[in-house]
Image (cartoon, rainbow, N blue to C red; front, side):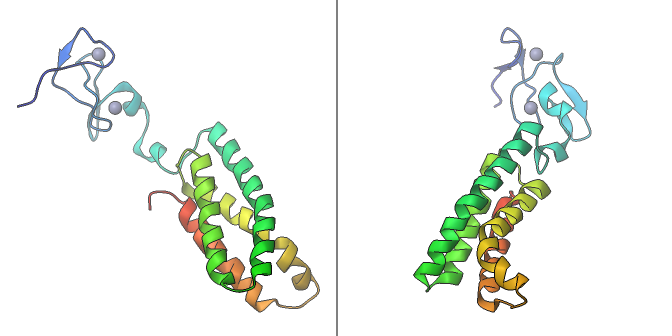
Amino acid sequence: MASVQRCYRHPDRETRITCATCGKPICTECMQQTAVGLKCPEDAKMPRSARTGVMKPHQIAKTALAGLGVGVAGIFVVFAIFQIGFFSLLLSGVAGYFAGTLILRAGGRNGGPIAMATAAAAILIAYAPFVGPPLLAGNLPGYPLVMVLIALVLAVFSSRGQI
Ligand SMILES: [Zn+2]
Ligand SMILES: [Zn+2]
């Protein structure tokens, strides 16, 4: 039996209606009719697509900042991975995964194209000092390139959100 709840915006009003998105109780005055049911004013304003993959400006700024930070810090991580010399592919994958996760968190866990592009850029920054010079010199650094690819795939995968 559904117990009577009180509107979260009007604690003095009893209601049996709850928002289809967030489940908060809403009174008849607050409820908004949408294509997918009754919703609270906050969720009615926000189309479904706005809840995933779309960021607010401050989240985009944080994502870009995190991407830069992860990229620069990543240079040291990549340097360490090259020093260790073994498990490089595995370590690159782990580093890429953490880079993507950090960037996803910075953007409020929205994920989406901006987070994915930022994660890819961060990996490229991190590996550029090691892979860039030989590439520019016309040599194809095969093994490091595989490391970049693995890190890239995992970073983009972990930053897209909604896994
Ligand atoms: Zn709601
Ligand atoms: Zn209300």
